[in-house]
Amino acid sequence: MKHLLSRWLAIVASALMALAASYSGAAPGYALVLFVLLVGLVMVVDPPGANERGPTIVNPQPAMPADPLPSIRASIEALDMPVLVMGAGADLLAQNAAAERAFGDLGEGQHVSARWRSPGILDMIRETIETGTPNQIEHSERLPSERVYIVRVAPVETEGRPLFLLSFRDISELRRLDRMRSDFVANASHELRTPLASLRGFIETMQGPAKDDAKAKERFLAIMLDQANRMSRLVDDLLSLSRLELKAHLPPDQMVDLKPVLGHVRDSLAPLAADLGVEIRLDLPEEKIEVMGERDELVEVFENLIENACKYGQDGKVVDVVVRREPGVGTEVRVRDRGPGIPAEHVPRLTERFYRVNVEDSRSKKGTGLGLAIVKHILTRHRARLLVKSELGVGSEFTVRF
Image (tube, rainbow, N blue to C red; front, side, top):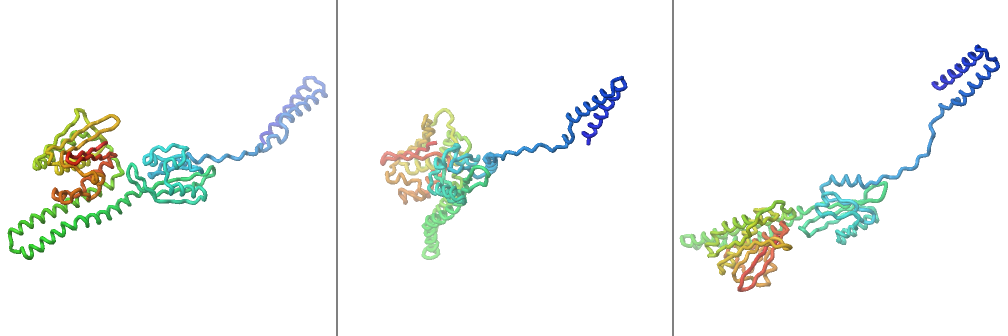
């Protein structure tokens, strides 16, 4: 409508210009020709219907599907379980922060077999890529600590390239609890059988033949107290071992100076060493010796090692504790006694639960057979090692290497 009005105004203006030319003395034919020319010019510049045409239609090109990987990467970062993204060739394309904490930086583009060589995992992934059906298996990791996962692989619905999610659900705590219950029952029932039988026998004797024997009662009560204390130590050690197993996968995150730790252990064991006639000698460097660890657990480690050296190496009269930090080796704490030594066939089994080189000797020294097992579990959590050297007639050396 607006354009139509503008055309009519142009025509009227052309007529007025022709009339003005006529009034100014121009020939009538000239004015008519001028009017026709102006109207024609208007029609050429703005022909009817020119502005009523619709927009030019251009055939759109089909849009390329967007790459789904960035959005998937952002989504898996919100998950607290390890998740990885794979392509159709089982090549790793992305991993979230939880996967990097659990398995390290795996590197994009490498095949999944570069990190996991388990036939079960590889066969499961291959089957899912071929069939598009989700699968899962149970998988165990041994290093740096024992972990158990439910590993699941599933395809991702995308418009572009095919992608697959590989997830790891940690069920280590459930497996540890199950094993802890069964181990506790088995160990407690085995080790408590003897002291319970002794207590029962002494009680029956005091109720029967020794009912009126005051001296026998006094002697039996002392033995019964000793057996009860033994059971108490055994239960305490079993509970301590169970607690350590529950957090074996959690490495400590604090720095501990070993010099005050070893000084504290020496002072706490001084009464026992004096009773046994043993001298505990510390050989410490001048500077701080710091390691990543938990102070209370390290105290328990060195208490066990130094107490064992005092008890079983008391014939040598001296226990040496030496701390050294060597380039390329790390920090070492050596506990050395001059006792009778340990036969070579027993050394590999010293950290097993309830393993004793000499059962009677161990029980006479009020050992539970769990001390070195506790040491092993603490050092495993600290990513440290226990090395044992022993020579008959010379003595034994227990080295903790951080």
